[in-house]
Length: 309
Image (cartoon, rainbow, N blue to C red; front, side, top):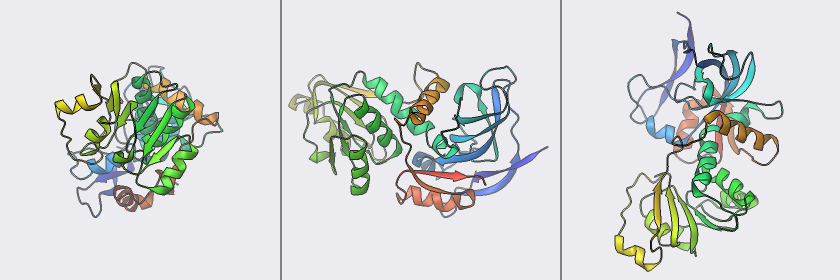
């Protein structure tokens, strides 16, 4: 049995993962074996590390080199630089990735940029598709400091939307303005409205406040609960403004488009200079435990990308 190095959850908040020897994956016929050159960490993954499921290994955002193409002929053929979105196991030297969750990287997109794209980029792209046409429409975006908020702001502004981004971080607010946000507010209560579309990712008390700023017959898309606090809504509050509004639950994997096609679209936009993955920290994977703690505690602005050098 061939082994490799991989990060394994411990359930200990002081040291959430340890580097261990694990069996190298054996790809299914529709999977390619990828040598991981860089991976990025999503804050949601740090939450799952608090109570890891038995045998679960983290890692959904990777970039690297296909060393064994899918046996069924799907996906990249031969040796190829790729970005991939496996459902797990990406924080390792090698990972088996479904061919339908891979896109090739051109020479002018680095593995660091590629690793920063998948989960946040896919969520932003599909979230805006769910919102429908945004040209000339007013959008309120909560939780805008993270990777999804960064991508949503840039894509929506480029498509002609007027974006109000909510972030408590002044530095992140300045960056979101550079990316096209028309207005930055530091609390949902400061947003003036009404908005045609609300994209809400924090839950808790922020959700009803955001809903109150929605226009009549507007749409609120609920795509996260970063506050980790349940929201409470009152039916009669709708009559004070967002009458007949729609609240839609959103999950980025529930989509009619293919992962590989959408990853390829994100790569193309990056190569054309129309999408800018924001990398807050680049470090060797030996610093993974520290990076996870800093990300959990919001001490990293932008994506944390680790290289396997």
